[in-house]
Image (cartoon, rainbow, N blue to C red; front, side, top):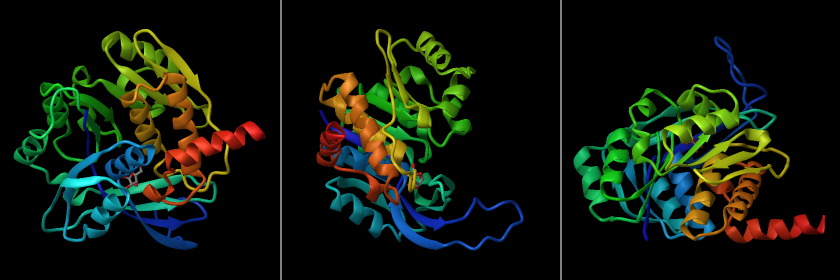
Length: 299
Ligand code: RIB
């Protein structure tokens, strides 16, 4: 079984701010750092740090060496990362004193894929392989459909949420990882249990993870429902926490780890990620996650 993460790669320009900039306001930042991120890249790094072999596919621009280098450094196979003229994707991220973020995204090269390029990459994968997707690439509905046609296990994190998600047919998706806002939009319901009920009624084959911020996460499929609390930590920067959860979830699924244990690892990995700065650099290795459980036991 192969894992293909087809996704965005962004250069994240991160500013420490006292509060998020208001309309019309000019705000002094306390500091600025550049990190390597993008939901796709973060998820690939999380998959790799959790212990899976992962191929990343996507598009960078002329300034994309830093992104390729970060993937390689983190053990991700970059043979399907393409490069073309123009700028890579980038973001302007504000992180406030409570560690919350606000992200302005410029898609750049991430949004320039052609159907031919997608077909070429997918031709190297076959039935039973995993295809991990988020919504920072163009042609997402095509990618979802083409992945399903090839018999791949399609994993979708419909983030950032926009009109494109409505064009993706969830009957082609096997695993859906959503937050509360995405859950509300997809189901029309507010209550977490109702969100899961509606989505499972429509798509009984789905495995769904619904993350609820400080309230933890819910897992649901046709025969199982589980709740996972968060592990409380001092929040430094929430950027990439959801991507960390996704990577660790797929690791558990692909390795047949019992769902309770998978969710526990996801929660601990995300807790470690929010206690550190940046997106991909904040993602912990599996050894760190398992060590953190040992320390929990001693408390
Ligand atoms: O999920 C976090 C990521 O979202 C950041 O790394 C940023 O690049 C945006 O894509």
